[in-house]
Length: 290
Image (cartoon, rainbow, N blue to C red):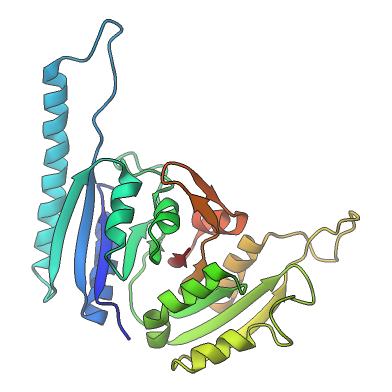
């Protein structure tokens, strides 16, 4: 089982080249068609008090915007020309999230980058990856802006909670899980009984994966929390998102697979606490499905 069509988001950020290299390595591993999607900056809506900006201003801005797109396209095609891959370039101007989400629906998986808020060279919205994850209906692989990441045969940690979103994420990433060097299933619960996970939390999903040729090791963790009465467990309070990232580091995982909880109306994003935390503080690439 492999991915046959991969979409990669291209922008003007400092990490764009590293993200493209990651996407190319992944496309080569799966012998997939690679599509680059670039969204042109929206026109500036600055107005004088007495009316609009001079026509020359908009013409100059439009020319500069197109120059950026032409430069990005040239770099993309030059880089892909060195590979024996089937590829194409797509670009459009409009709502960033809507354009990427629409194109993502025609790919098996989409590769995006975590937005670096300190990178002023990029016009990419800070919540773009999250928004596309909730809007596209396809798995989204997000590469952190900090660190050096290469696609290969990673150790993948699956954050499993038995939800619809987590189920979708596991199914969507079977090609990655089947080629991973190691798969760890992490079940995090705030209750010692782990309701809804059976007598052995993680055993059922590990068995499902085994039937698909994936040997997975399951771990069950009870996240410390504050009781309704205000009494604490002996360990300090920690949120589930933090526990997921902490355990990924403990296990030496190179990638995290998880469900994205939340809802989106393309212009409005509401993420669950765990999803939001992981997107903001990721230290390894994450793949999410909604």
